[in-house]
Length: 320
Image (cartoon, rainbow, N blue to C red; front, side):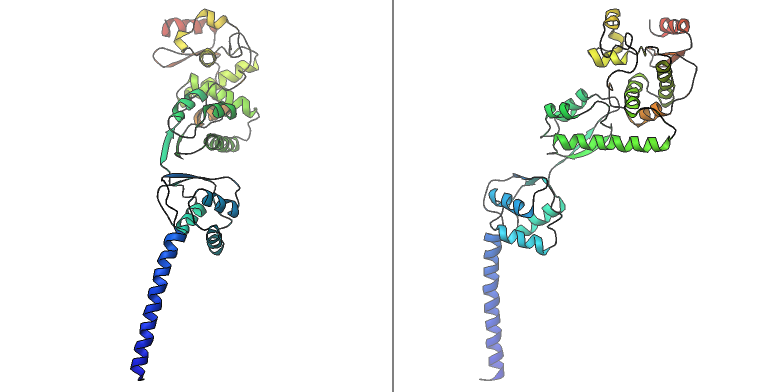
């Protein structure tokens, strides 16, 4: 047999082997590496702290892979066994084990992004109404149980559509804590209790709407507390009984309650809203002034007075 014939026969054998390997590879890829035939989309839930074995068990139970062993081996070979991310993954179509492993390693949830804006002065009730129709997993009962008024920072956030209530609250609380830490570092001379600052800031948020006005009102609030004078702010009634400032009656003001700052001295028991950064800063660093009284006129402007007589004159002039 000539060398040329031997080379040709070897080449044919190589082609045959390559063809067999290709067919077997396609069979393997289709029946072993791809997800079984099932209905899509599918919500894949990876619990926090789940091990590689537990994750592959979940994938198998959900009919998303044929081979747990191959999934485990591939994750170990790629060095991603310690970086698997918990959460809810939206599997919209058949996919390979390679891609599934990569998604879980990188936390690619494949969910729609929901943009939610929480405004300064929003209460927990306001937030629940806003978020309840936007996030599929939002549970208002859980939200009110784990949230604390005044500690959810107002901002514009982007969430995955299947974000849990717990994760939503954590995100806003974490941002609040970050802002508070930054402000306290800016004003190391502050000696006031942090919770008192938050409560005062929530009142400031509702009573004033300009940087200067907030700092002026802040000083008046702290001074009233120092001289043991009732705060006498209408915003606490809005929170306590659900009326607007201009709808309050004499009967409302004389009815005792935890948020009646006309009858009870000191700060109310909780914040009355979720203050933004400027109100928090105003509560920490007020503008010193001699006024004891303030009001917001029907024109939206702030008016101050040192004496009660001047305050009454401002009420007649700007509220009547």
